[in-house]
Image (tube, rainbow, N blue to C red):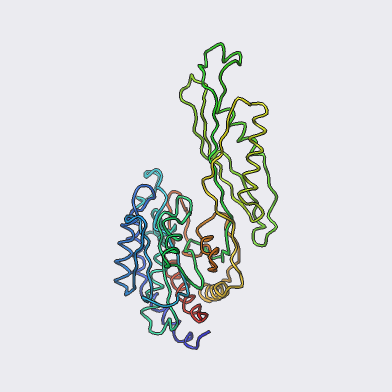
Length: 410
């Protein structure tokens, strides 16, 4: 631990405390900038972030495959080795039915100690805390005597965390690096990794026939793709896989959620000759795509025993592995100590049930906390919110973690 810590850290904490009104203002502004995936491109969010970063004396780099869906990299210095890398995403899920919200979903309403709006906690609160942590490190002299800290905000996370426009692109451009990374999702546990996610589209082809025809009644013509699909989905529902025995994953099992979306049929009086369904599988380290696909194909074969007039197709949509960081990495002990010093609570170590882009960093040898950030609730739901006080508190944790982690840079 560097000798300057005892004198620098109180200055960082004081600077962030004094900036609390600004932290709330910027969070509100980001929520008021809609960035719903599939509706708004992320360029407006990136422009707001760039403006706020420049105002705070930070350095920005824009890199994009699609100009209207850029990545923004915000740094405490233009050059140098990166110690702490903070990751956020600029897109959000849709708001659902506006009328169900207590406050308009893009209002950024501040009341009862919370800020409400789509993206408040997933993930705009995290990027605001990150932004002001970096600003504190630049405004307090000698806070980062070694290297630099960075915030990367990527687009298109909410459609499956493939990283095509974000992490993968930045890695190819040589713009990705760090001694340790934190995905700035909500929570106070040290999330060492996450379950994998494998998704399939299964298509069933049958034979159309008029539902009033004698041939259909006698079973001579027509085969229902919908009923074949129903048979398959019910069989998949009965597959129960054992609990994981991998450390930290033992609270989970590989789970097949069959038929999360279904579409089929053409008219009420036609035997449906087409049906498609989506299958979402959350995997533990014991099960990879190959094993899961084998289970699904076995179930298809069982359906075909009694429905050999049907035809099935199985198409892979997503394949994200279950991952676990090296828990001995300096990031985890540093973040644990800082969190306990700020909150008085020592964080637990765990892995996440949902997947995120953490696997893209862990696979590249960057120790990653797959979710640690401001406190809030109603992710992807009505009345999403982030707690106002947790924004500044999280910024303090990030700033001190960056300060201490820098001592481990080569």
